[in-house]
Length: 424
Image (cartoon, rainbow, N blue to C red):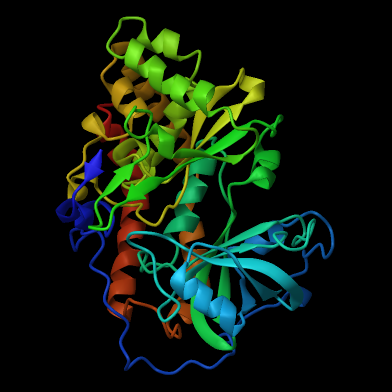
């Protein structure tokens, strides 16, 4: 599906009602200057107590209570290259909480909506073993540093991933970093665990299956085509980890949907290719968290894992949670007619819809036992001193407060909201 530019404002740039998430303001030059030191209260690895040092346990990197100092160094040629081709890796150096890596891959991150240049608050992908095989940070091979220019609250990613985890899904860990480039402070970033082979090892008994990424084709006029299991668009679901079996796995699922959609045996037969229990939990988590730019509503921001332990069935893995805690009608979307083909087909099949509704009920029961308010309070304590001194933050204090209040309001009514969406 080719999405035109007028709809881009809604789908990618996040035009949304003020009571949910107000518009992002441009960075103001009048913001107070920030020096190269992080705000008071920063704690390094020597006083965290549970830093395992050289062990393979890297949970310490993703604490919601700590902000790690991250320094990126790039030479003049690397900087020129990133200005020309921002998504191609260049060689640079990285220091993470005092641990230096002399040769790492660095590129910019984000496309529509959250992309910023090096002159703005650019987001970064770091590949630690791109130039030095086997190099890692206590087992982490890649770092994802999100600029949070879309999320004025500073903790949507953290909160949303905890929701997915509580509902029983593979979930990325989230921490925080105070980032500088060549000595210039870029500010506070969400440090998010990458979905890669190491992520698969943490979540699956057999992590050697094929992992694909749902991408999109961007045209010069800024319209774009979203990847999905359709003849027009499944070629944009590309291999990320494993051995390519696109024809059988990805296009095979497209063919199966073409054949089975609308048939009485749709749910049973497609269940040979799709992990329906996993998919139902994913839709439930996307609903509960208000993930408007995920697979179900917008056919965006997802991976697909074909799990050998589940007879190679496909499982959608959500990604990029900065457009969470939003009502779908603000984007002219609906859970009854979302863009993600798998979810859309399920909603229009009686047996699949019944199973989906049951999964939402189970998810709400699970969420009713989770203290998200405590996590919210911890996140506020962590991020607000840093956001107040972030030289490239695109939201002022008023908007930050409004976003944070909107998230707090949402988590208090999430289960009631999800049950209402699915008629429970």
